[in-house]
Image 1: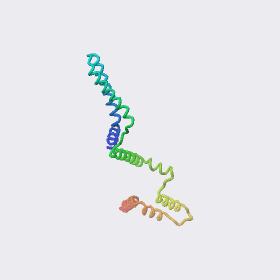
Image 2: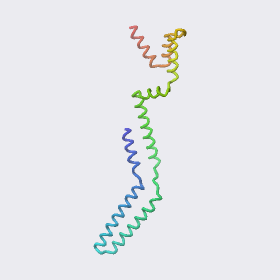
Image 3: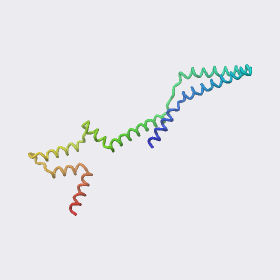
Image 4: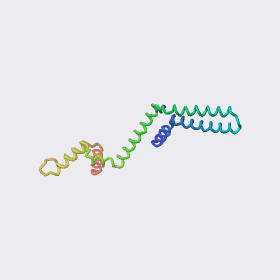
Length: 161
């Protein structure tokens, strides 16, 4: 779905009105020159004069086109930003699901306060001079992580059975 949106936005962004006008004007000038050549071949001064006039007017369009700017519609800008946001979100999800996000967080030292608090308590349980024990560590871990708490209760139920 994201790829489809990116392709649509890219195609719509490539439809420049100024570019279309310039290309059409070039085609008009080419056709006018062909018409003038044909008028010379059949010796018709009215056709040659008309073709020359068309070519002159098309050349004037090219001169005037230099002062024209493309204006992106508001809806196109919005679609572009939505597409960019979707791509950024997709990259973040992919990074997080592959574990690269966790690696980056650890590498830059961005640790959650809950994890740091549990790590401090775990370090305290290993210190013989501190009163904290295994029960306090497990209680803290269960209090701060509901998923761990549910898994712990399930493990206790299996052991009792």
